[in-house]
Image (cartoon, rainbow, N blue to C red; front, side, top):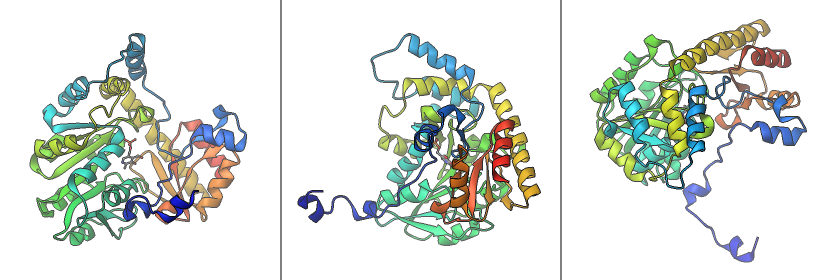
Length: 366
Ligand SMILES: Cc1ncc(COP(=O)(O)O)c(C=O)c1O
C-alpha cells in the first residue's frame, strides 16, 4: 500500500465499519479449495432450488440466445410485469423489478432512509436489512427476537420519530420462523403511516396455500407497505438475479427513481416470466421441499439435535459448534452455512435438498 493510501481514509465512516456479508461458498470455490470434482459437491448453503432451473425458463432463455440482441434490455420489463399483473391483479405501476430482491432491499433503504433516520429490524432477521440501512447512513435499530423469530411488539416499541423504514422477513431467513397474516395485519394497523414497511416474502411459495398472503390485498389496505418476492428460491432462478416488489404507486415511484434503468437482463426477464406461470414446477418444488424438510427434521430428531421448525426451504439446527461442523462437512464435499455472522455460533443452516442429498448430509452429520 502506498504511503498516500495509508494516511488518507477513503469513504464514509459508516461504510468503513460495515461488516462484510459472507455468502454461502460456491461449488466451484469449494472444489478448487479442497481439490474435489465440482460435480461431487453437495451445496446446501444458499437455499437454492435442488430441482434446478425450470424447463419453461430454460426454453425462454434459449429463445433469446437463438436471436440475441445487442440492445439494452427493456427497462420496464413489460412482459414480466404483465404476467405479474395477471397473477396478482395489480397494475404495472405498482410493480418494481430488481436484480434479485437483494437489490430491492437496497433500493428501499436508498429511497426511504438516510442519515439521521432509523430503520427497525429484528435480531436474527435476514442480514441484508441491517447492511442496507447502514450503507445509506441510517441507524439500524435491532430489536430482540422472540423464540428466534421477529417480536412484532418489540419492533412497534422501537419505532420513534426518527423511524422511516422497517423490514420484516416472513418466513424469516435464517431461522425459518413464520408469522400468521392476522398478526402481520394487527402489526401493520399500529405502524404509523409515515413509516414504510418492507414485508419480504422470499420464501412464501413454500407455504401451504392457506398461509399465502395476497400481496394485492395487503398493499391496497396499507399504503405504507412494500411486499417483496424473488425468483431465486422456489422458481429456481437464483443465478439469473431477479425479484419483484408490489406497492402503491407513491412508493413504487420512489423505488423506480433509485433503480438503475437496466438492472435486469433480457434473459432474467424472460426466464422469470416463464417461471412465474409454471405451476407444475412450483408444485413439484413444494412437494420435494415438504418431504425433504421432514426427512431432515426426522434425522435431527433421531440424533437428538435441536432445530427450529421451518416454513422455508432450509432448517436451522443446533450442532454445538457451527463452524467446526461446517469445516468437517466441507472435508466431505458438503457445504452448509455457519451462523457466526448472526452470532448463532452453535447453529448451522442447512438447505433442503433432494432425498438423496438429505440422506448424504444426514449420514455425514450424524
Ligand atoms: C429473506 C430473504 N430475502 C431476500 C433474499 C435475497 O434473494 P435474491 O436477492 O436472490 O432475490 C434472500 C436470499 O437468501 C432471503 O433469504
